[in-house]
Image (cartoon, rainbow, N blue to C red):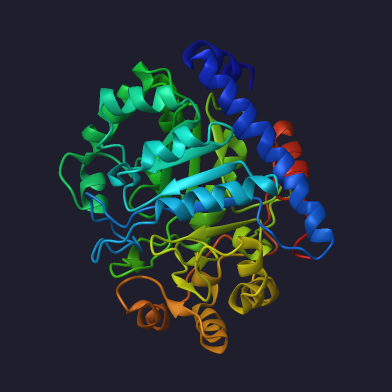
Length: 394
């Protein structure tokens, strides 16, 4: 932890480090505290939002749920209204996704008009030039979270492009030259677990100026699900053990959204702490669940959420069925919830229900009897008090 803090103070511009710590860190902790208080009163208003601002993308990844055609984009006025209303409830942290969000024409307007917020930009990194990195630096309230999915061969196969690996690292280096706080995200599957879930990879990231690593588990969804890439139960246990061990020694901050401080699985969407807004303006439980019964429509968001039966049933039924990912553990139950609540397909393909019904259950991050508690005191404390200690699973 001391090594990480030293690196961040040396490598990140002071203004950007302050925004990262205060807007992104302190305000997020306050947002979770306010969420907990609302939850105790029976008010389930999220602490965080993830916005897929466009469906456009320059790659075509295995397991991606976003369809670039027809192209869809969030209305900029709806985005401003959502952010302003979220701020009134103490939310200042937003994930910006796509498609590829750098293809959205109003991206910088979002960043610049909300300097009191913090944004994590989920990007494949191939479009980050020196000019783009400089623009992000001027905004000051954004951290690029760059996706790396394996070595040269695996990256091209997984991402549906050419020279993806080298182009991604070029984007990463452009961010480094601008002294940005930099993150890397990796979806761990059978073809990359031996390359990416290693101490050597984390050290390589640190050497390339990366400050935090967001690991998540591959989910075989979308029109090209590639279920053969999904991890086995044994591999997930191995992956969890790696995370716990690496947190005690890695020079990079390691983030996951799957386990609490005691190693018990959870689904952030089922707790209600976050929701996803798709490129069509639909309010979904999380990005890969492309179904919704509510949409941004200019009305107060809190009223829209309060009247959405699909989200209510999702939060009520999913925790009773699994502590893991409902998509992987029990896709049939999810299909039943969707059908009973009248939620609509928001994928743009009109095939999401067919894809869901064709899914075969596979291992998720729920590990009854094999829970691995956090070892590192800082991560244990943070998860208990600020992130996943709110008792939403009863």
